Amino acid sequence: MAGHFRKPHGWFGSLVFGRFMNRINRKITDETITLLEIKPQHQVLEIGFGGGVGLARVAQAVSRGKVSGIDFSPEMVSQAERRLRRQIAEGRMQVQFGDVSAIPFPDATFDRVLTINTIYFWPDALQGMEEIRRVLKDGGRGAVSIRSGEKMANYPVTKYDFRLFSSEDVASLMERVGLRDIRVDHRDRDKWYDQVVVIGTR
Image (cartoon, rainbow, N blue to C red; front, side, top):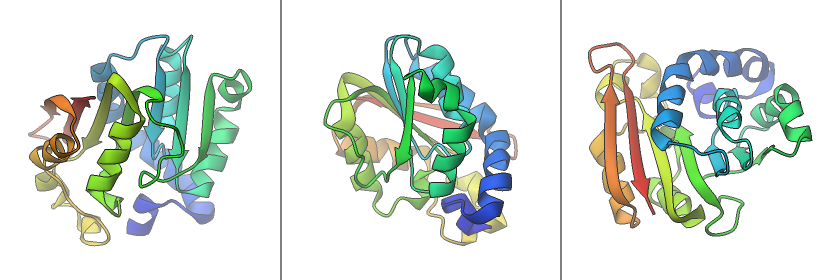
């Protein structure tokens, strides 16, 4: 199960796990998109889009710009190509295989970058954050959304292949790569699943 959280694969990852991730990530995805204040003309990237709920929500906000998504699970890319084929055919969206360690886009491409519940699996968190900063335009905003390490430690699955983070950890990484005006939004602290959104500006 931990392996599917990191990289959904096979028939289970494609048919079951993507839908499961959409359901459990819906609230934190909505909060992240709202806090990023995405405009109709923006170029937006989602890293590790999983089941694709974030891509679909961003596409509703971006009418004159474009939504791009990368995921290092071939099954998730294929699923997104099927589920979001209309947006892709209209030229408003592109999805492709890719990794946060080497984001396959030029410098200063995006107005907004978001990634939700993926940082636990990055091979090098500082390098991943540097890549986010690199592909942001000047004045662009990046959001890294997580469940707090305190909450995540209560889930048995996180004992395997997860690296847990606090909001302070994520904010510190943003500071180290030169992002500024960092702010933290932490909701549902008293619930089983909390919502932590950390936003920095290039």
